Length: 158
Image (tube, rainbow, N blue to C red; front, side, top):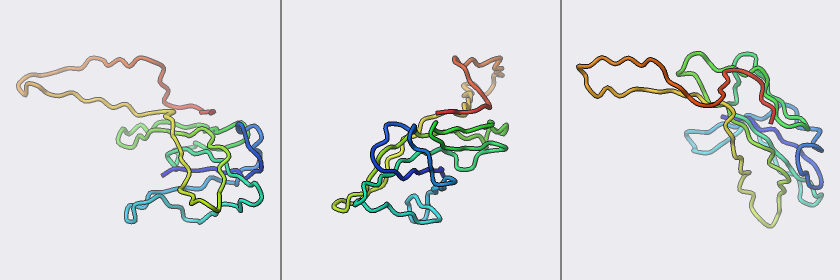
């Protein structure tokens, strides 16, 4: 599941710089495995197209952040504070976020088929395994090197 923030406004935004009043807390979107579609617990509707009202969005995943982590969208963009990687490998998840999805409008003459949200990876779990080519041999892995800077906790500002 993932969380989505929305901003209703008139005119076109070029970035979050003019988006000052987001709709409170983010809305959780979950995949309904029975019905095979993304859904929310609350229905929201597009504003009338007669008033030049548009919606802009931002999102992050996973919907449930671990420990003391918090997520907010402001006119500066998305901030996720105090995110930490779970120490249990099986419970590690990729931290992903979208950039701003700006100026979406509803046109009565066309059907709205959703909003495309492209996620970027902020933090990914890296897991490795070794294949035992000879069951009679003993193998020892002394080290694994991954190039680049990797963090296990911190603050994301997009």
